Length: 140
Image (cartoon, rainbow, N blue to C red; front, side):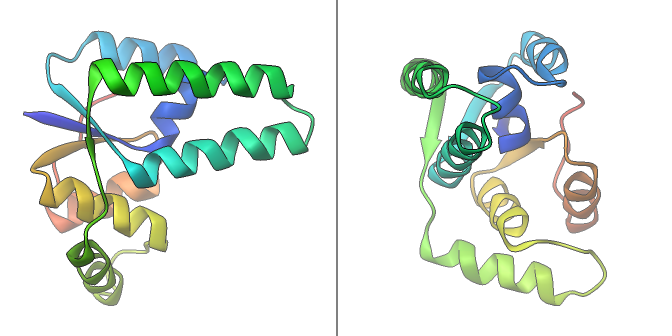
């Protein structure tokens, strides 16, 4: 099985974060192929940039995080791109109305589903929605 990593996990892996230990432990316990999307990469970059703007992180630290993330993605993960059908699938998830979903979370779930992956996220509402949609959640 493959595990799709949400940005909540990725940030915890590459920045000082309250969930860093949890992320390290979750990945050590996996024998699965790790999957990261270009959407998750963009969100990770946005989080790091925001932390620089709010002075929670120095620009040099963000650059190191970007470099480490890029190296890790190139050697340790399978990268998947957003495809046209992902937006339509995400729209359908949101329109179900029985699960509260933000657009980026719905897109992540759609990409995970299309890629045949379980989802590893620390975002509880997202995990709850994914379960309701039928996506397996990786314990982390």
